[in-house]
Image (tube, rainbow, N blue to C red; front, side, top):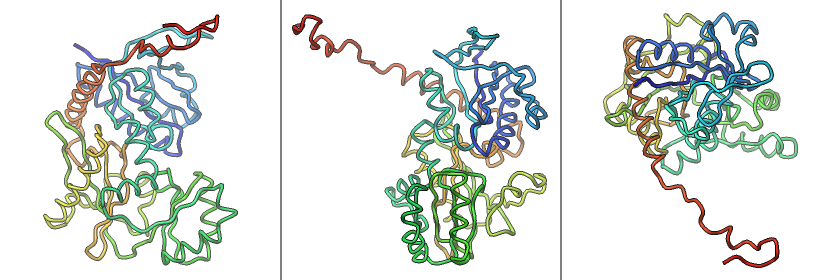
Amino acid sequence: MSKNIIVFFGGMSCENEVSIITGVMTANLLKQTKRLQVFPIYIAQKGQFYTGKNILQIENYKTDAYLDFTEVYLQNGYIWYKKGKHFTQGERIDAAINCCHGTGGEDGMVSAILHANAIANLSPSMLASSVYMDKLTTKIFAEGLQIPILPYVTIREEDFIKAKDKFFQKIEELGYPVILKPNCLGSSIGIQVLLDKKHVDEACQQAFAYDSSIIVEKYLVEKRELNCACYRSSQGVVTSMCEEPMSNASILTFTEKYLENQKDSKRIFPANIDAELQKEVQSITKKLYQKLDMCGVVRADFIISNGQLFFNEMNTVPGSLAWYLFCSKLEDFQYILLDMLEVALDRHKKRNNKILLRNSGILECIPNMHGGIKK
């Protein structure tokens, strides 16, 4: 039986354009199978949902051409299409996958919409998405699992003016150089490496332009970065081999990630590391995945320095869904997506079979209009 599946892309974040690339790739792969009816839905930066015949043509997003598409929304598991001032009911949706990086997607918003509509979710849940979107919460969670992380300090924008001197002192105690990041952002946006205290105030102000809180970590000059991806298959949790992204800059920049020629991608895969370190990275990735009972594809990022391994962050919607860490050819990734779909549908079915308590009798104890108590 054919299944109806939504591919969400775009999103209410600075990473909207990156998400378009991921979403178009994913939708086109899923469209190759006759088992699925694919419904791509673009989420604009202001939050509107759109779909249309040419929704997967990237040219439409270089301008505001997407505004001519049909506006839609979800209710009771159905797509509703806007026609004039009214909406008409469309298809019943079986499942959906989230390709929205950053705020309004990767933070759990899309997962919440799917949960409210009783739609199977191929991506991480609301809880896992929200935990790993927030860098501070991620660190607290990792510390609770006794997973090594870099020393850090954090502050909210509302506390910055009245407590910034104390915050700057905490940064001094970390010891320069440090790396400053918006707390809930990705794709290297707003991130700066600070060699001394000279520009720390300015860097904080710039980061607050993107987010309401920032986090500052000890920056390791001599280091290597390692990435490891993970997904839940019908046979269990699968972890990839590690890759080592390469960069000549102090951090892997947005330009290097997305704007340079991807055929000349600067990475080593598999990473040139010993089997023991490979196993350790895979084990931590799997642990972080399983402890929140995740599904979908994620990518865990690590740093190794002077023989010490540190967990850095988790991407619950990794760029291009990290297909290149599992497949030598993009076309083969569709089979992983189909496997993920079966897992999502099975988990959704089991969840729907749980008891939902109704008419527990509580309201019978509320006084009636005449002031008496119903028995």
